[in-house]
Length: 292
Image (tube, helix red, strand yellow):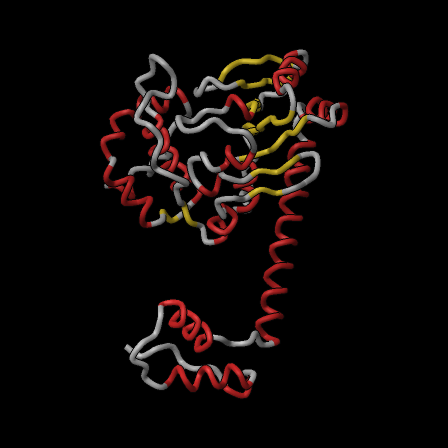
């Protein structure tokens, strides 16, 4: 098999030209390190002005896109009666970190016109339980399907899951920061977070890239085969299975090949559909199409 095409010699320094000339002559002995270096030299191409322009354009496009997401996220938060309470908590305590995550950000990137039914927040910093105590004074605190805190603010039907980062547990390791949390999410389109204080955006699983390609891709498949709560029939992997299929159908996303293979290999989870709908939400009518 022939090697990669040589670059234009006119763009290389004399020393590199000499190395390239030697690279073309057969050698009886060549160490692995020398082979790697010769391959790099033969593959080298200086960036053109067009390359630099394209890279700058891509960077600016990404920055502008995230600025738009930040503005739209703020507009949605301002329209929710629970936001003034959270905003005041952030203003009064510099050690509190609150991150907006999940479906709201996903749907903004997807340019969805659907109004959010709920919000997902993760609470970091020192003593996040104090934040929950403050929230309980302005509404009702309950628990969601995973047993995590769910806040119903006064005068609004839309609730918010308000999860302290140290107590977030998805069957894997305990989390210390928002990156740990996002790396244990269900699918990459959801693994997004926005620091509501600073506007910093977190995307460790390249979820925004998957959204731009309208691609549904699981973050991981190594969750333990255990119930989501003691006494529950519904398992963690079954929840993952249903959520991927439901949101792919509901948002018109193509399922990535490795994810689709996992879904088809675990079609037995469909037997838990009744339990899933009882705990979470009604499944999209066409959710089973990719695995049938």
